[in-house]
Image (cartoon, rainbow, N blue to C red; front, side):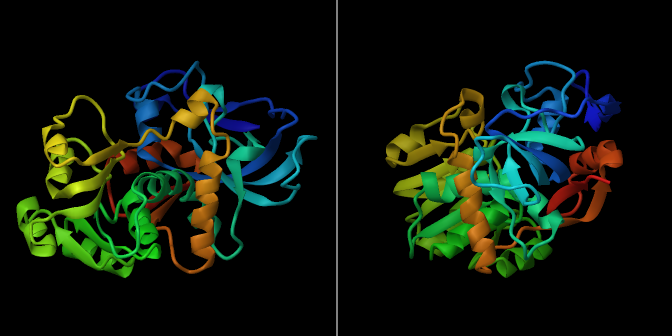
Length: 329
């Protein structure tokens, strides 16, 4: 089979096409004919060496996959040959990634793909589904009627979090950076879209909460925005961060008794625990899609597996909105 590999971390010139032996599967796995993947920030960071989760080289990158089952192990009971599935399943702990013709995947890491949306949209789902669902539902436990502020509401995780929170009956506020992004966020179901470039956190917290703060804040931006998120969170509120790296000042969290939840989505795969944790989240998101309550945003530009380097360069340029999809040609 053909595979796109890297022998070392670095820039996009590290990608190269290689002939690989078609993988075999164990009794608990299925073999997928890979149809597509998408680019998550983590995929860029792994290739660049900023996210040290690769055990050895050469490595086939990309954690998200959509594909059709071509073989099943003898202990696989929930899937059959010919079914299209999706999963957050690659790279970690020596697992093969999606940038290849075929990919072995554990049965507990995949979910049946919905029939009513395209492969491109299915390919966008896995990691952002896991992250957004864990943030809004598992950690924040958002409830109907609560005020939830989601930073980066048209980003990969952010646009999913907006729609998930809305499906639970929350009043959704989100920060955006332009009028176009405002229109998009509102079209996704946000009740209010706040331009962080023209309003300070103090101003919008006063306007929308009368200075009391938001019940829940989801920070998908990280860095200095964590401090902004603390300021926006109500006393006894919940703050979830998908990018809580390095040292942070927790004084305001202590002063307001804020519950702070960092997310590390790599733990189940890295530690081999909670085997169905991620797939159950993806399944919940797929159910929202089937009910017409959620739609993934896909970037208008499309790439083939032969254009992986160009796709990564495009992702690094942060051009446009929506997940960047790479289809196996």
